Length: 372
Image 1: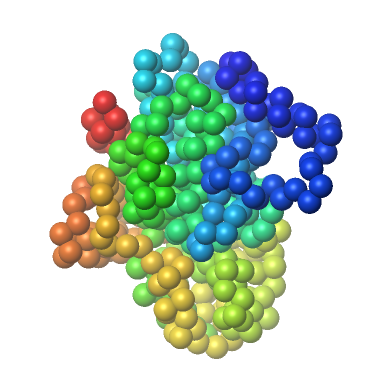
Image 2: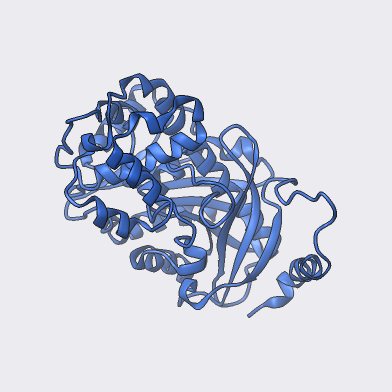
């Protein structure tokens, strides 16, 4: 492993661990993207195509600019470092849960996402992958808070470059599902939030959009309308919104079963939450209607339809039952209606996870052109 690149950061971290932090030190205080800790990855989180891999804890900001800590992984491809450094793919993962101990940089993520990142490594890209603030770091994960996720994705690039100077300032974002939503928000804010970086474009796969129009209908008695996982994703969003907006008193809107599951969601990963939900319908989460939450949801999870200053590639599987294709087609229509430039690719046989593999060659051709 190339420890020479990260040795100065490691030595600082060791010194703090031995001597203890300065009196009244606040680990959150500092520039976004600055590194708090760095160390080797657990083998469970390593990728086979990586020459080196590190776990970092770094500073980022929430929806309103307040400091948070996040963690993530940095992967470096094999071979000599290019003259301009390794171009970077900042990967935003899909839904794996809200609980500490679910973060990919510690336990590894979905096998399909690992294979996707590995393909970028083998193509000569460094990969940095945020866990999102609150997943394995203090506080709650603001699930589907697009602005907070976008900050975390950008600051992961900053942290990766601080830990590994071989990383170039040229970078793109890619993400699936929750990460596809994060990728769109990243694309919207990247050049203004981090002007010192050379952001080139976005790959957003199966991004959930227009949810602020869908979720407010999820009051008592409402079924799932055939959308796989709708109860779970609505639950996670309510837990995140409750933490971000305590003034909304989200717990009072939940049924006793909804409150029980909301507590569970902060303790176990998504597979176990889904098992406990079973065939429960989304309306069973609530004790009263939530249509008045539409403005708050629009601010929290709404995806902008304009203001993208770099290319955006959207990939969607036609047989996706988690993020149904009509929602993505509606979003594409909204983008087109305000003359936002984008590239939409549809994959007839791909489901929600399958779009990762189905779209890779198209995404690689686009990204290669953007960073060359």
